Image (cartoon, rainbow over all chains, first blue to last red):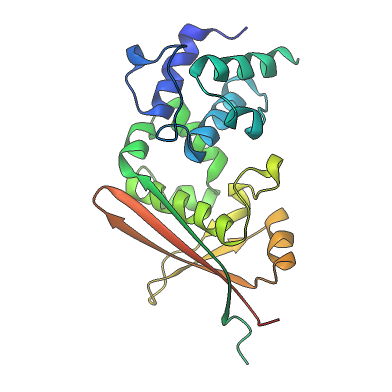
Length: 78
Length: 135
């Protein structure tokens, strides 16, 4: 499992929201979940965990909790 | 004879400059910059948010003009397999393709990609024209 407390503020920069405003429940919409955000998450996971996450899996995410689940799964595949 | 006069695809992309202002200087921004931009581009755009947005949207537009996206694991082109040249006097830049992007362009009979970028009310809009010979 990734350290969510450390990772969520990094995700907040991708979504251009305040670090204390991001939560598992935050919904991903067409407004905030575009190719820039998906690429941002892919690049961040590569840098932080040296793991590759699937763009298709990320595009299917509908909440931050879904994103964390995809990242957790990628990191667990050691 | 000019073999680049037929438009084989058009792509457009738009991003808020604000998103890049937020990203630059953060861990996520550093990661995105390393992932999406070539070394030459990083040297040219430095920490300028408008330039980041211009190069990023130009790549998205170019990929769309070729009929693909920017996710190689989903059949697209890696951003680093595209490099935006400095703006020419014509007002257009070129998208230089490398790696797997070359094969994608060849399959689409595209010989070159011209890109144009504008800043409009806090947004950067890039358009790309994939050009080739008439079939």
